[in-house]
Length: 235
Image 1 (cartoon, rainbow, N blue to C red):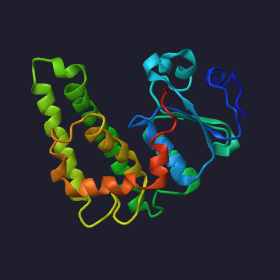
Image 2 (image 1 turned 90 degrees about the horizontal axis):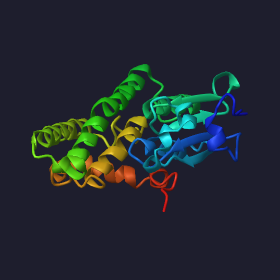
Image 3 (image 1 turned 180 degrees about the vertical axis):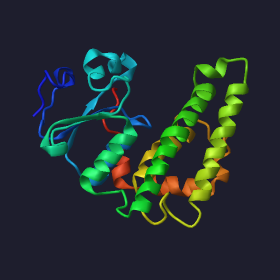
Image 4 (image 1 turned 90 degrees about the vertical axis):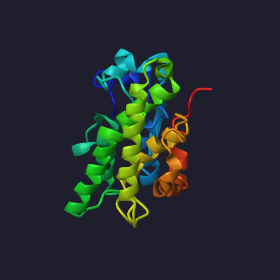
């Protein structure tokens, strides 16, 4: 059971179902990793919308759970040794949920670490580079007179798509025939690149045919379709 003294976030976003895992998130490329994962594994949870447009991640209650002030974050009432457990960083949450449920992470040590390395690839390269491209292409950065930053992130995003294109040769998923947390970590970011960031032509996405087919396969999964809209954005 959660207590406000131990987990102050529950005072601002109280749990209606305290026996379930609590998700604090928004449908961003990082946020949907966890909602998709939870939908895929079927673990009961309760989602709380954190409105970054209202700076809710910088409130004392949210910062008590994630001092970095970013979504997503979770509270699990049934954590290690049966005790409530708090966790932030989307990659860490994916690993935690995979190990907790023994799903979407290979058991064989070599394949397990290979899956983890592709999650880290997303965290260290794809997310930061695609995000910077989005800033310089669609948002305030597009007004910068100096176009060298945009050109840098355009070239790097194309290079990363090429890495994925080569990885997908001969397999439907990042780990070949097996759908894993590596795919979940990447789907939202690739979708965002050509959707919300409107960079499809900029990065010549259509020449990365395997990546495009992989994205379509991933987005067709019912759990992915549900997870992309959890929690629902404010009207």
